[in-house]
Amino acid sequence: MRWPHYEHVFFDCDSTLTAVEGIDVLAASTGKQAEIERLTNLAMDGQLDLEDIYARRLQAINPTRAQIREIRRVYKRNTVDDAAEVIAALHAMGHKVYIISGGLAEPVEEFGVYLGVPRQRIRAVGVQYNKLSGNWWQNRNPGERYLTYDAGALTVSDGKARIVREFLRTQSGRSLLIGDGMSDLLAGTAVDLFIGYGGVVTRQPVLAQAPAFIHSRSLAPLLPLAAGPAALKRFDNQNLAPKAVNLIRKGALTFQNEQLEQKFRKACETIYPRPDRGAARHSGSPNQADVRPPDARMY
Image (cartoon, rainbow, N blue to C red):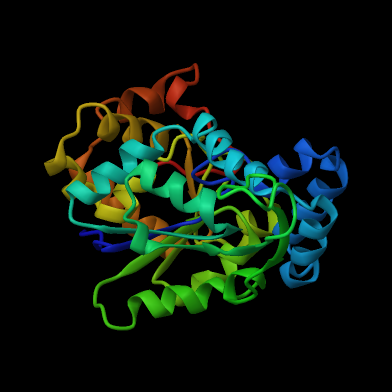
């Protein structure tokens, strides 16, 4: 059975491509981490609307331009396993890659370009600075303080879908989106397949509702979902392809949609048959490949 090719691949940024939340990085630099993290987690878990806390968090932190720029360095130091390699592989296999984030535009864009995503396919939230703060008389003023943000689709919980549709309006081809939070789950209505990501943090509402869910820190299991096992086999990356298959066999990928799971499992079995399947079935001791999250199904 053939698995479809998803030409357009949309990534969230914070807690998906990088292991940190940019707003929490800012909060840590100003001593307000505990309260800001609490608000962020409530929004990401769907218990608060993002629009209710977006301005509140930034006003509480009141960051400088230099502090916002520092986020990009923290993003890079905490890049999720195989993120850049997966993006490069997707490009090599003919996919178009995007980043849609509720994070701040300057660090998100620079981080995305660092990972290999074209700047024109990255969307995040712009901010404006108080030009009369800091050393205002200097041409470059890193002490400029945050003034306001550009309110729009990415500052509300259900706004990412609008950005996805704008990108896809004049394009054809299947699309998927991967992310960790409720705003990503809600954006799943605009794509053909939504994949939850729990490699940094597992948010239970997303795990419960995502048609497919990646549990591993590595993003390698995304490749057979995006390209299909047959295309991944043809690509034949000596590191990523075997890693993706092995992680999936260990339960790094689970499904809430049984029909989707059966289709994917059959496609994988055709291209990557399990040589030890019979031996594992009759063995009295568990194989390392059987170590997996509760209720995970293996192919």
